[in-house]
Length: 556
Image 1 (cartoon, helix red, strand yellow):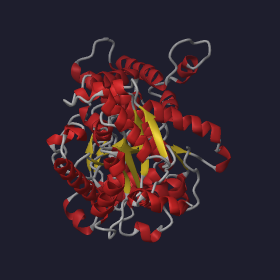
Image 2: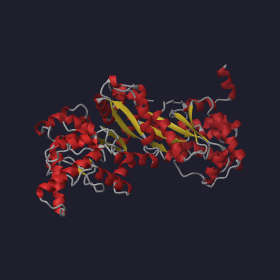
Image 3: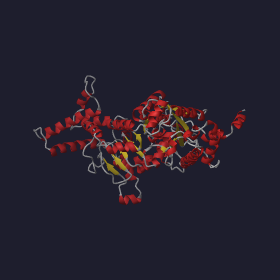
Image 4: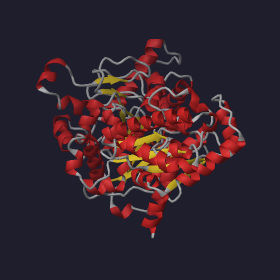
C-alpha cells in the first residue's frame, strides 16, 4: 500500500497515510520522535549537494584536480568512482601541493599535518558558503516552504540529527528564540562527537559527519566525514560501538528522515542494524517527489517494499507542500486535531489473538514504539497456568471474574488515549475460548456486563490479528513458561478459538516454525503497511450473550 503522493491539503494527507501520522504524533507526545535531515534541506538555501561540492573543489586553484576527476570518472577507469573515493584523491592532491609549496621535505610534523587539514576544511567551508547570502538568511529561513513547520518538532525532539556540514538548523533555532531565550541561550546545542553528554534536553543538533558553521571559528569540528578514509573510520567506529549515541537514538526513538538519499554508508549500517535487532520498530522516510509527472505507481510500490524490507522504513512520497503539511499535522495539539480534521482517522487498535504459546505476549513486547497493553494488568493468577477442567466450579467463577476485570481495565485504558496505534495482547472475546461451549452464553453476558459496566461503557473496536500455530510449536513454547498442556487440551482450545471468532474479519499471521523476529516482522507489515479492518468486538460479544433461541429468531 503506497501512501498518496502530492496531497492537496491536510485531509488528503490524513487519508493517504493515516497510521503514519497517528504514530508520529503519538511518539511526539511520548518525547520519542526524532528528526534526521539530509542535503535535500540545505540545497534550498544555496548549499551545493555533495557531487557539486566535489566538482567545485576539483576546480579550486589549490587543488587543480579537474582533469584528474575526469579521468577517474572515465569508463576506461575500472576503479572506484564513488564521491568518497574521488574526495580522497582530491585531498591527497591538495596535501601534496601544500607540501611542495611549503618545503622540499616529504615528512610533516604533527602540527604541520594538522595545519594542512585545517586549511583543507577552510577551503571546503569557503566553497560551501560561497553562494549563501548571510544577510538574507533569516528571511529565507522564515519563508522556506516547509522547514519553519518543523521548528516546534525540533524544539521538542530529544535530538535532531543533521548529516549536513552547515548550520541551517542552528540558525533556524537562533532566529526563533523567545525574548527570554535571547538573554540566556542561543536556543540550540551543537554536537559532532559520536559520544558526548548533552547540556540541553532539547534543541540538540548532532552532526555525525562533522560541522562547519557560517563563521568558521565559531566551533568548526576538527574533521569531516567526507573522503574514503573518514567514511571507513566511521564504519569501524560504528561496528566497535563508538557511535552508541546515534545507535541508541535510532533504537529508542521513531525517526522521520527528511532530505536524505540513503546513500550514507553509516546511516545504512545503523538502519539495517536496527531493523535486524528491533524488527518491530519502524522509522519514516520522505521520498521527495518534485511534481505529479514523476509519479510512477509501480516504481513507488517497489521503493516502498525495498525500504520497508531492508531498513524497516515506511516511505512517504511527498513534494515540498506535502512535507509542510506533514509537519503541521504531526505538531498539531491533540485537543485541536479532531476538531480541525473530524473526517480523519486518528486512532488504530489491533488485538493480538491466538492460543497460549502462540507468541502473543512476546510479539507485543517487540512493538514497544507503539502503545502496547500487557496480557494482564494485575499479576497473573497461578491457577491460570493449567486447563479449567482441573478446578471446581467455585475456582472457575473466581477466574472468570478476575479475567473480566482485567479486560475492563484494559478497555478503559485504550479509551483514555485518543490517538496513535494501539496493540493489545488478547481480545475481550478471548475468555470465551476457555471452558465448556455450552456455558458460553452466560459467560459472555457476565463478561459484557463487567467490561461495559452493564452497557454504560463501550468496548473498543479494533483489527484482529490471529497468530496461527500448530500443537507441536505450542507445546515447546509453553514449556518455557513452565506450562504443560496435553495435545487434547490444546486441540480443544484451538477449536474454541475458531468457533468464537467465526465470521469476524481477521488477519492471520503464521508462526509455524518461525522465529519471533520473523513473526514480529510480519506483524509490523500488517500494522504499518496493511489495510485497517475494524471489528465491532462489543457487538459480537452481545450477540453471543443472547440465548440461542433468540439468536436464531433474529437470524430468521
